[in-house]
Amino acid sequence: MNKMQLNKFRMYDAVNLVLDTHSEKVGTEGDLYEASQLLKTGQTVINRNRQVQEADSSGLTEHKGELRSELMGMILLFEAGVKAYATATKNPELKKMANYPVSKLKTVADKVLFDIGTLIHGMALPLKNDLGKYFIGEAEFLKMEQLLAEYELAIPRRRFSLNISKVSTDNIDGVFKAQDKLLRTHIDALVQPFQFSHPDFFNAYKNARKIVDYSGKGKVSPVAAVVTPV
Figure 1 (tube, rainbow, N blue to C red):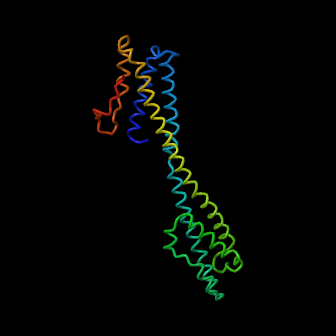
Figure 2: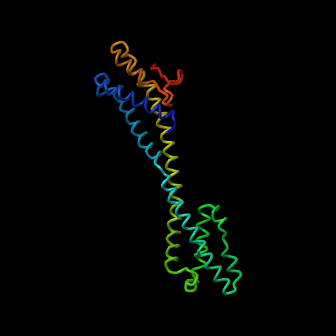
Figure 3: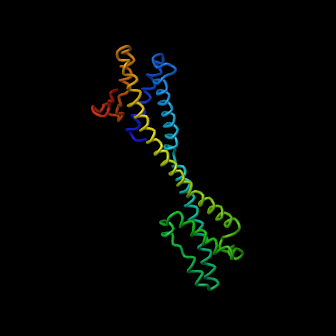
């Protein structure tokens, strides 16, 4: 949520508190009661989507970063082994193919790094029995395969997390609009008559409808911060 939405959210909570405190005026049926329940439902929806929106995806980013570093290290190890084998067997074509400078690995996109890892693993696989002397044995092949599998999964997981956040942001925007409309066109009007019969309730509601700018400056915007019931 942005700052304005957060301030509105607090206003909704304040309105709900007033309506709950004066439950005998709101009643347990009728238009005002039903509208107050809709307002509470909107708050519940905002809270649920807010939790998804604000979910910390940094853990995914950190995990993917660690996998990327490990995968780069294994690519360089396999590259060195394949190039050494190509040199020993006088195979310049293979040596040329297995050439991925560290400067390139550091800058390529995640999907490209995965593709490079897959390619170098594919080059090394037929040479498995000959690469032991270059420090690439069964454990290294297994590690490379595990890293490639984990890294491939880590890429869409991060994207999926961001997509969820975007969807939740859209959901929250829609609910805020609905909450504002509900207050402006229904609850404000339904509470208006209480200014004559129950002024304490009406004044408490009117104060609750103020949108306070919690910017840390301790001030309220004189124009946008107060919504007067109609």
